[in-house]
Image (cartoon, rainbow, N blue to C red; front, side, top):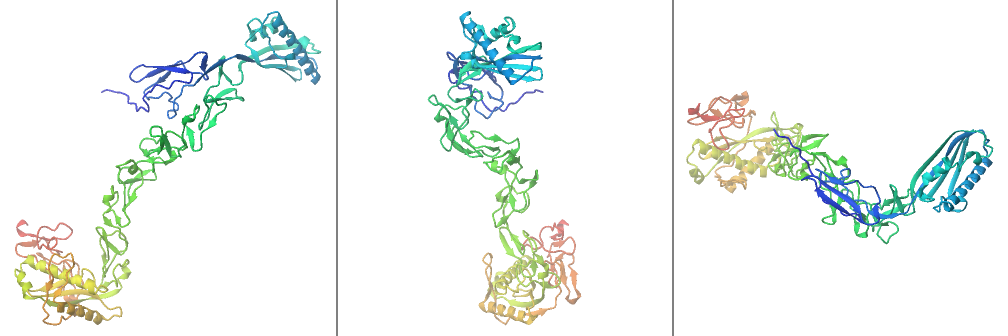
Length: 634
């Protein structure tokens, strides 16, 4: 087994740009690491401390603490005159009475001492004085007293580094206080008696002229891209959105709608478009672009976007908060309460693009739904988006026929009314819509010789084909001419010979309860059809119209027949009888069970149909009911 580390590099350790007034020297340590040293030209130094060298490691970045920000080496500025900012004095106690006049006298006495010492530094040592104003007014003296405890605090903000004959100022003061006793407190404090617990202290800081910043023990002049802060006495970078060139005394704002990539910009050419939140300025293309999926940007005017955690993604490509990062889900799933859940029926989600991976499922087109949950493509939206009262037929929605209802949406079938009741109109949604009593009617039709000759072979297979065509034609006729009373699917052939057929049809009473009106309407439609000479066929039929013979007026007779289940035959008023073995009954509304024919049979009784579509007694019935099969295979 071998182990190794894998680094996802955010950069490629590109050499940093030379700082203003200096240069960068880089070299590779190995195939991953690189080091750079920086230096300033001439009488200059960096305005901020820099390390001995900068390093770039496996991440490919020079500034790992802020990896998204552009790395810049601090600029170099001119070295200026260094002075000292001193604070020194004494802490002691004494029995002298302290008053406001006492403080004034201490101040006066100390200034006399400073004046004497200042003269000595200039004359005896031929050197630099301590204070440079008359009466040493540039020296601040304060006296504090709490009961018998005193503090004398002396402060001078700008004094030469060396005084007298080139002696460091701190050493010179300490020598004058401790060795030469030039500041004897007994001669300074009026009325002083005993002075006890005396301590001398001194503090020093580098002091620079205005426009210069102290860097260690050096004063460095503020350079382009920075501005002097008189409050903090530092050279501050021009804020993001501004710049300062060589001819400028202050930072200048970029034009409206513009900003800069970083603080410390030096030219108006550094101003770029200030992009909205959720976007970033692409330095390569020179325009604002969306962050993209799995990224966000809460601030405007940025040149980068922040990444979501692994396996998380944003709903849009312009996210403005990390809160918009959500766990991504597989195709067919969406994020619900932090868990990946199947898309509901009627929705889908793929994972082909970054946008698709986000945890929201998309709705199918208005008129379509999916067959089930968890669909992964719009191509799965193949089923009609049917409401209650309709059944789904691929991409179409068909109203539930008279005699049926459907209380739910997106269903493939309608529910049949029971106990001899039917609905009044198509598209019913409730079982209570089955409020109209229906009964059976029978009539016979005769066909002419040319049509009969074409189907002279009345084998069981041709018989079945003829039966199916008659049923389909009459259903089409009634659905067009008797739409308000037609019950879809309740047409069956009771008996058929070579030239005639007896048909059963179920229809409701008239709303007033008059079944004779229904009978009369059926006879009227049949008479017109016979007179026309043929039964109409639907447009999608694959057979010619059936030619009829107008030898007699069709008579419609009411039949007192009980409704039975499929696989059963009616037995007058006695009820329903199960079909015997080797016979079948697909509707349950006739008084006969059909024979499978020679060479075919059923596994058991109660068979529903012979075979698929119009094929009679062929193959095996594999669902809950039995079907005709070849006897040889039993």
